Image (tube, rainbow, N blue to C red; front, side, top):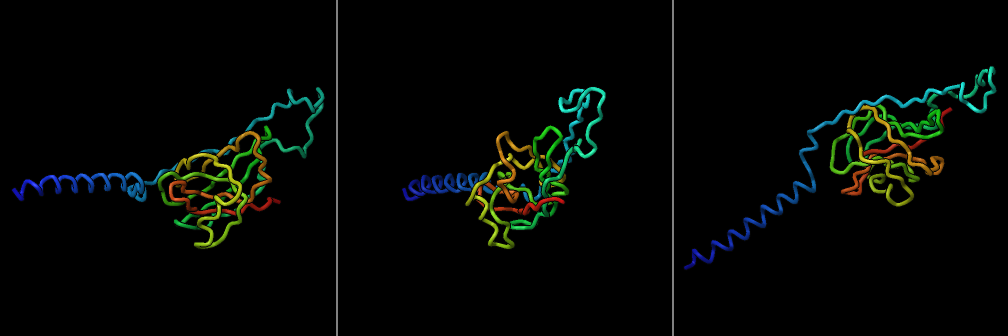
Length: 187
């Protein structure tokens, strides 16, 4: 009789352990620490068709000082927060007037639910900088395409890039920065 009572208890405990283990694996996704995703994208460039530029009269050549391709507006080097992170971030204005955040030579850990955020938060060294980026204004530019390489993240229409001063690789699941860069004016 005692054996029959223990069987449902053991079965119930085993089921609870299996469910907890499955939920933990889904939440933390530890295998991602050993999986690298390298993405290498070229900087988008827009060829300006001078013959269709309304500011240029027919037969007239465009101003030599007018930028014809991508222009770096601001940039900064990534510093490590929760995970070792290196690379460069550039805010680039394209010839059509749109902007992209470009991550170059990015090298960080992979993780669950990583995002690229443009923020107004100051970049702080060490643990003090891990959690500051969701305190103020930020714009999510989408999921991190890869934890290594060079990649582009277009700014959505209507976003004024001059309102933001930093970029973070943000783990949305655990509300922590993997790494961040303060943007300083190019020049």
